[in-house]
Length: 248
Image (cartoon, rainbow, N blue to C red; front, side, top):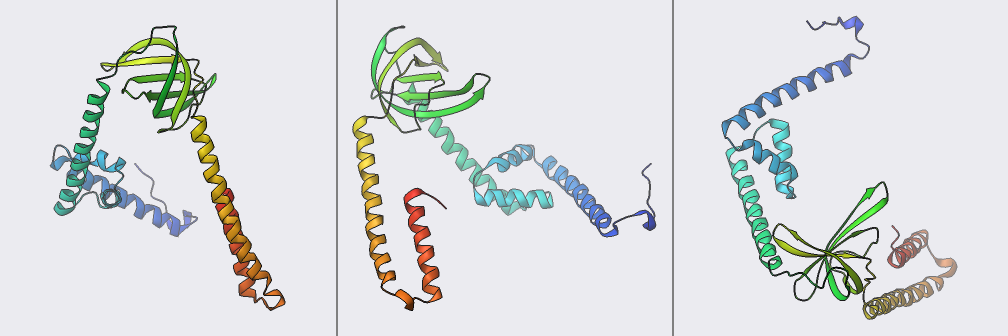
């Protein structure tokens, strides 16, 4: 049996009272939530879908569900519509991707060193006892799928790659042919890297040119600059630095 404390034994009566109120509220939520989830067979699944959904509205409805233990019929209908529409779109994307991947064939022979032009379709990594392991999925212009697993970082999703790699094996995953690569010397095309560098240099040059004009105008103020103008100039300089170096 739980002990009942006398007021004199409670060091912080306010905190104690708040804790009691929170416990009562939590118990009430559990009761309401249990009733709501038991009312319809898929309420548990709907709650799980709401918990991980990206929609701001669904997130707000989930917070309301957590607080009150249930949704109104209108709220539930709106949530179901959004969740079901997103699930249908996801299924369409998966089906479209599966149809596209079905055309993938094995490329080269095991042990062969290939010269490739690929585009990264996904890239992920995780830590192991041997260091960072990178897993990269790529496709060629024909839609053939290539997979690399190793400690070399190749790039991000959408990056084009050119270079060589060795065929480690020919695999099949979920009915889709995959060419597994090893020892890649794949990198973003030199011409693309040069073009991006030139574009970045032009961007910085434009910022510095505008900065020079603004600074000259400020210097012309001389001793007549007001405190507000001094503060504005300091903020402008910080903005210029952030625009060039990406500093907040």
